[in-house]
Image 1: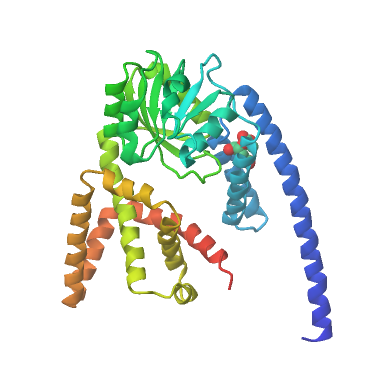
Image 2 (image 1 turned 45 degrees about the vertical axis):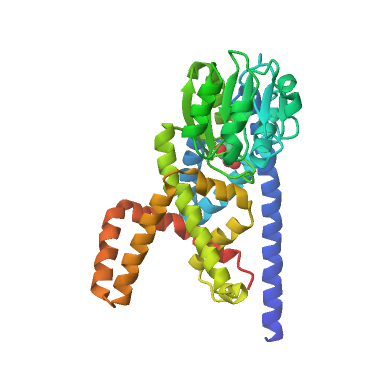
Length: 378
Ligand SMILES: C=C(O[C@@H]1C=C(C(=O)O)C=C[C@H]1O)C(=O)O
């Protein structure tokens, strides 16, 4: 490059550095303001996540961006990323305690990952939390004595037996669980305890950081008035609640969880058997393939027993998976027969069935693909 061009480039780059530094100061100012909002919300008992405020703010900023010739999507992306940061920071202030006159809460399995997250959230909300872990059963009576709520957060394979081992709880004690399946645990809780019962399924892993925008499925067991405060508390943490019948929940989970994880498992198993060279695959990966590898790879970074239990716990999941295998074979036959027309016809038939959702999923995945590409090193 000519000396003049090099100098021009350097001067411009210096100015960009200045702008970026100003952005950092602005971000610091924004975070301080958000922290103050957090403190006000904490006092008032308002949820961290304010969807209406976000929607109106995004709409205004998108318009303003457009007016000065900046892509509205760019501004929305940046603001959404900042808001995600806000949820994390607001959390540190603690949360409004919805029920103040509560006796201690016991988390069975409170040293586990999800139990630990609930321990943290309840403690940040001012509740007294005790833990009953697998080595504490000789003291179970003492730990559960006078408890106002017992939350069972143990591996699926032992949930029912743990519930049946619990000491007799006070009649007004709430019994809840956090298991990924709901019918059997809820039935076991109703059988083991005369008081209020609720089944919860947090639809996220323990590494979420904040519960803002996360989903918790609620399966009512008995005496829902008694645990209404718990649901309000979870909303204060920013989560969304979805009520479901336990059987309906379990049926949906066959596709959402058992089948999903089983397919990822087989995909990973196949890569292993083929002894695929992951470095080479990554090198040639398209963004969608990177996302797929990320989805499959992250499964194997986690606990084998947890996922095995999720897949095995569903009585009918092997039927759903066998159906899937049948369709795989059908599609393979079309491929082996070289029947291009049939393949296209089936493709279009499925596309029609997806309807508007197909477009929605394409739009949603577009952003994910872009960030998969952004995180590429080379
Ligand atoms: C800061 C607030 O809390 C959250 C974070 C927001 C942000 O970072 O702009 C906006 C709305 C809320 O979801 C607020 O309510 O204003």
